[in-house]
Length: 443
Image 1 (cartoon, rainbow, N blue to C red):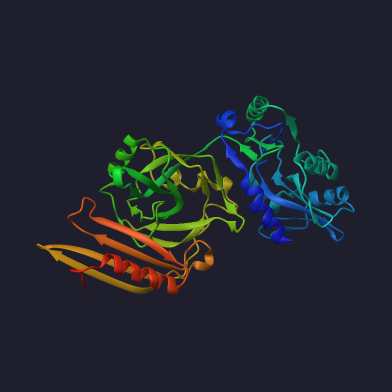
Image 2: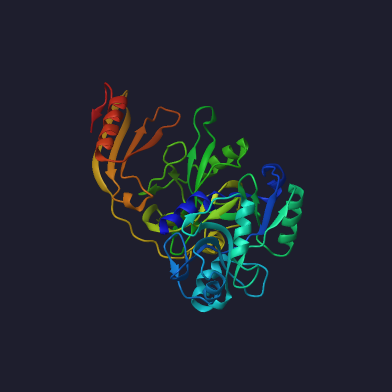
């Protein structure tokens, strides 16, 4: 059962295309028909029914067997064997729904929970595959149009202009946005951008003709007690002038770190004092994947160095782009903290970071070359992470540091990863062969 739900989450639900309202007219594909529904801000669950009963289950394996809405579902689905995809959400007399209220409602107010079905995953033990109009008709034939268990109301429209008008009406009514399913194409989530105030944790300079410009920022959110929750990288949204400006802003604030993160150009980020706050705009935020809630590194700032102290609940930024600096904001939990993303998270954003297994140093070699009193250094460090089981880390890592004071860019770093010891040994040998020539001596 759970494999079916995970497959649906990965192949269907996770492929909805996020779209901002202002992009609806130019980025949404044209179609013969658009099925539009209000976006319910809840948790994806599956309403399952067979000869033994009715229950709710999510792709993570959480099963719910006792809820007021399930008593209604037993009457509605009596004698039916099916798996229906939908949103588990709450109602409290207001038009707007919020996903963050679902966990507390399961504990304290189960009578406020509703299930809105929108797709048929299986029927009579077999996968259900049909054009969207037939899927919609089948959902509506299985569920009522209202009540605690219902089919999500869909309106067919024939133009993107009609869709834009419906979106405006929903937004005016306090809705988060709309979901648009094309009869002959993809499904879109249309809702406003998400703006976040994030702390800059590191940077990567561009190279080649763009040397002297910022390539990417490494960003995160402030947690209590000097901790920072890493979120990801931001490299879009900068003009060339801004890339020069922001690179200068962070140069000179570099600090040491026992954690290494690699940029999109496969170069290690240079970590900086966690003081600068920027605004980042995202198309959407995701709190979980098919494997479960998203977890990312948590770094503790000692005042001198970043220490990797574990993993914490986080979100993934979709379509992140730089909007501007926030000199009016401090890098604090109150002004650039986890509270900004809690409503997206499956678990409370303030949860404690889980400690990770210690890495194991396998090999370290340093080579020195002196010429006319000037010393250059090349250092090769290889280790086993012991964290590959998390699904977030490689098994083996090789880090190379190349320092030459006569170069325009004196310090260069690179990172390579390998799945096993043999692969790591091959990487190490190749680096030595390419970089240690005549004149280099082992320190």
